[in-house]
Length: 319
Image (cartoon, rainbow, N blue to C red; front, side, top):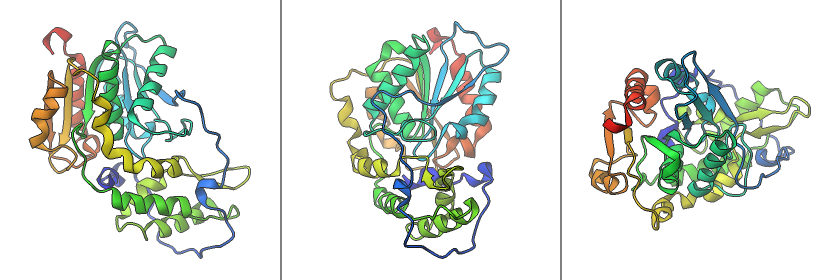
């Protein structure tokens, strides 16, 4: 899980803050600093819409979902490039418990697929092209199996439906640190960032991982209270269930629509030996290997855009 957060600084250009800030015993834990009501399921996902002058409303749109700790903003550059190369509307969405989307009491692929279905039905899109990275890829894979009639084609970015690296131990420590961080509301945002970063670095030695997580830090302009945009408390509770992913597919037939996997040769999230099993679930799938880590679309953006563009523009009869 931790690898998906690395190699991001070159694109996000986050300021590195190294000054130390004294801890405090008075501030409440960050996860409880602000009251954010839980929404019922399915939710209305926050989104950003990209349209070009040649966007064809009769074409199925592309719906893109980010990975763990990410948001729709991570896909803004890719979306802008794709909308210029295809005739489709492109929606980048915030998954539940992330970004500006509502927090919920559950976090799993079936429920998140329900959010995608609600998103499409609310906008009267009978079908869509789906793209998801890591956690988002798992959601879109499940959606394609559950609702094949609503899936025109599927793009999965560096995640396998068969297995994931067993790195949840470090992720557990990171979540523990996130929910226990205490930041007094009188601190300015810059000082709050310094203190939060200091405490997170005690849970992981990956500075890049911490910087990526810091994109989730928020400060209420009215009350001064700090909070995480992502629902760290809930995500921590559901972390042990990440390895139960395949059980969701037990009663579902294979998805036979056109599917492409785009994976990094330096990432452990797709194993070459798993490909025969992947084909059992996605018999019309192809795979592209790029010289990249887990964030394939950041490491090799031009190659990534070229592959996705060709796939989206390919006539269905030729897929």
